Each structure stands twice: as C-alpha cells, then as structure tokens.
Image (cartoon, rainbow, N blue to C red):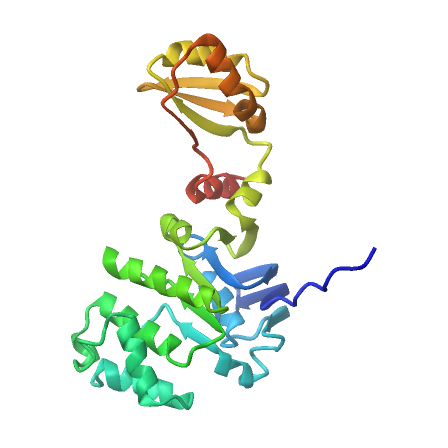
Length: 309
C-alpha cells in the first residue's frame, strides 16, 4: 500500500500545559491540538478560557507543559506574533484617540499602511464612527474597534476572546460572517464564548472547558458520541402522540417516553435503531408524524452532560 500524504502539523497545540497563579489554578493539564478553520472555545465564566488564550498568544508562560503556535513557542519567540491577530476580553484603549487613529496606530506597528486600517474599520462596520473619540463609544463599538485592530494586518491566526459581548444582533451576525470569510481565505480562527448558541452559530468544532480542564474536543456529534452512558433524547411530533408513544416503547434501546403537547420525548440508548425502525413502524400502523428532532445535539445539552460527570 502506498502511504498517503502526512498529516499537516497542527496550527496550535497544548501538551500537558498548566497555569496557576499562586494557589489559584487557571488551567490544568491541557492536551489538545487545533487545526485550520474556526474552533470555538466554550465554557462558563471562570472556566479558564482567557488563560487558555493568553497562553496561546504568548502573554503568559505555562507553569508546566508546552504550548506551540505556528510551530513556535509563542512566549519565547515574538516573531510569531506578526502572524496572529488578538482581540482581548478586557478593554485597553487610549480613550482620547479616535477609533480610526487607534487602529491606524496599532496597524502601523505591524508595518501596515493606513489604508489597511481604514479597510478593517469598514469591514467591522465602524467606518462612519471612525472619527469619534473612543471614550464616546458604546460597548459594542469598542468591541468592533478591537476586532478591527486584530484583523488589519491580515493575520494567519485570529484569536478572539468573547468578541461579541455588548453587540446587538446585527453586529453579531457581521462578526460571524467576518470569521467565516477568514476561514474561507485559509486562516485559523479560535474564538471563546460562554454563550452556547453563539458558538453553534459559528462552528461545529468545539473545545469544552470547565474548571480549568479540557472536558471534550471535537464536533458536536463526536462529543455526543462520548456520552453513550447517557440516554439520547429524540422528540417526535404527532397528532396521535399517545398511540405513537406505545409504539416507540417497543423499539430496541428505548428506555422511556414522555408525552408533552402533541410530542413524544424518547430516551434511547440506541438512537440509530430508533431512526432506522421508526419510519417502517409508523407506516405499518398508519400513524402521522409531523416532525422529528434530536433534542440533545445542541451544545447546551452536551455541556450539561459533561459538567455533570
């Protein structure tokens, strides 16, 4: 057999990396690799997301273990920073500068012309307000200034720490579209959030953090597949829900059903068997079905399972 091409090296990796601040633990024994595209870093406030991203961008040195970004140690090799754009969670502005002057200043540190900074402001929807002083900006506008400075030098890796805090729905959609555009252009985007539906709207690839530990890595389907000891939940809608419930109880792997407002909620240890047998059974019995959905494939349900372990 002719061997296939070698796997490309990861864009970023953690090998048994940990960080503690005195007696406070920020990250514990993290081992994870991140490839191209968009990866969501998901966890509640205090889960260790900011520590994870600060280690990744070289702002902190791990207390133990190793962190690599674009093949280099981001703490020891400052040359890697030229290829990285970072949006921090905390604000750090020269408040009397205008948004345009601020982005031009930071872009200039990367050797970028003013036109690139102005283009970045246009891409984040802040061109019209670029002449105003930052101290007059709303929270959402301040977030967009931070995003503009992060993308002005067209980085290979974009690291965003809670980028959509304080943004209205239109601005949030613009940010998601912008990240997807970076992905299409071959960049890697790593974005943290404590809001589950934001991550689901951005990407299917997630790293789940809880209490400083990496609890799971992969797609929603891969992570849900790790939880087979928990019954999967399926919802089937039917005007004859009671008859349907009796039928579903006889299917392999079904451990319980619950009726609720024209729907049957099914707990099963073998969802594939349910999906395979259900169409034939309802046709044979002449039962109408109006809808079918997996109730626990959302990240909120998956995260709830993980933190309960």
